[in-house]
Length: 261
Image 1 (tube, helix red, strand yellow):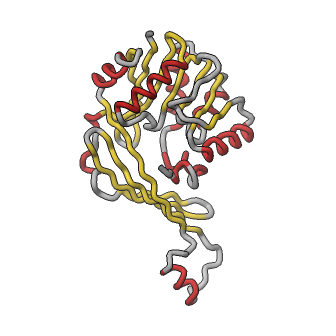
Image 2 (cartoon, helix red, strand yellow):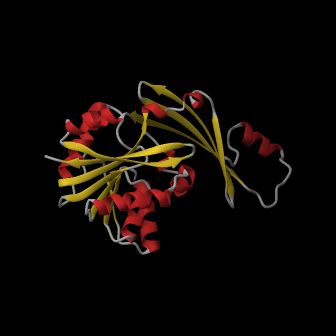
Image 3 (cartoon, rainbow, N blue to C red):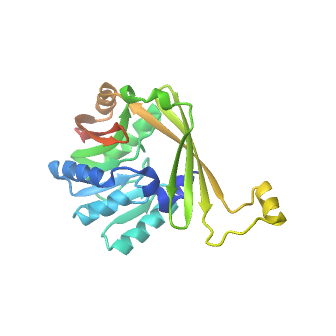
């Protein structure tokens, strides 16, 4: 599936996501230090923010993402920031490091939504972790679904120097999975606006105006703590901790699974 958020919109990903990036890095780093983790792989690393920041903090960090645009952007930023980080184009169902790692991350709701795919993901992640290694992934709890927001358009905008980004999102729940369709419109700013002529009007009618429009679809699975425990045990892990960070009026959860077999 084409994901504009991981292609044309990659340079604006960090802005659009609007997370507490610093707070998240502090939390992740504290978890890694607590478990004496040095070698870390970020599965579904996106534009590589976490990998670059962890690299700056002294961790041996590698980012893996299926989006080539994400990886190219991450490498460019790492080079610009002079960060010792490694990035690989690949699927987290198949990626295997040369040596076992201490920890794996799967953030920004990148954990698979279907049970079959989740088992595949956990099986491959387990194979790359040493015994006692940890997997940290973020998720939302079923008990915290904001039902009033489902089925209605939610509009947000970002006013940048050269253009404005407007996003209209509509979500719906299917079982325990949130399906969201997001429409992004990039409006360029003109320093010297002119009165539209007939050609400009024609282009607008034909959809050839200067504004760029992208449609992005995403799926996010909601979990309960007992469900995570069950899934972990069935995949050779155990749930050892659950952390939370506030985000826009609700809480984002971070499960920590430890490989036991």
